[in-house]
Length: 252
Image (cartoon, rainbow, N blue to C red):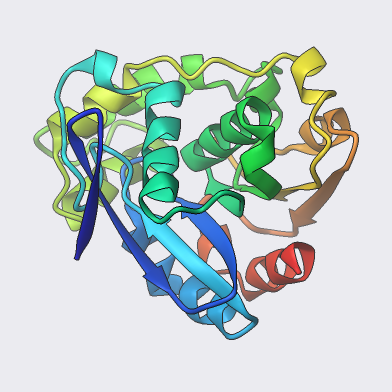
C-alpha cells in the first residue's frame, strides 16, 4: 500500500503495469477500487500497454478523510492527483475522470496543460460548463443530505439514494463525503474550454439522471469527441466493456 502527502493529507495510490501512464480519477462516494478496479479497468488498460495509476481522492477509500468542507472542492481534489504524479515523477500523463472525477480531470487539463496529453470524461454532462439542469451546485446539496442519513433514504430518488449505498458498502465516512459534497465545484467557462487543445473524449449514458448528457461539453473543445452509450445510466458505464474499449482506442 502506497501513500503520498498533499499538504499534510495522506493520499492512497496504486499502480499497475508498464508503458504509457494513465491516471484514473473516481467519482464521488466511491474509490479507485469500487469505480474502476472491480470492473476490470486495470486489466483492460495494462493488457494494451498502459501503466495504470489509481488513487483515492481525499475523503474516499483508503485516503485521509478530513471533515472540514474547506479541505475539498475542485482545486483540492486536483491537488491530490498532482501530488501522486509528483511522487511518481510523472511529468505528463493521460487522464480518465468519472462523474465527480470528470470535473477534476477537466480542471487539471485546463489548468496544467503541459502535464496532461489526453483526457476522457466519463459519466458526465454539459453541466461541467454550467448548462442546466445537471450542475454540481444543484446536485451536491441533495447528495450531502442523502449520505448523512443514518438509514437508507427511501424518500429520495433511486439515483440519489444510491450514494448512501455506496458509502455504506465501501465503509466510507458519511461525514467526510458530506463535507466533500458541500464544497465548491464551479463550472468551467466556455471560453476556457475553447482554449484546451488536447484531445478529449466525453462519454455519457443515454439515461443519466445524475449529470445528464454531454454533447455541448464535447463540442466546446477544439478536439472534443462525444460518445453516448444507448440505454446506459450514470452508474452502468463503469462496467461497460464498450466504454473501456473506446477509451483504450482513444488513448493509444
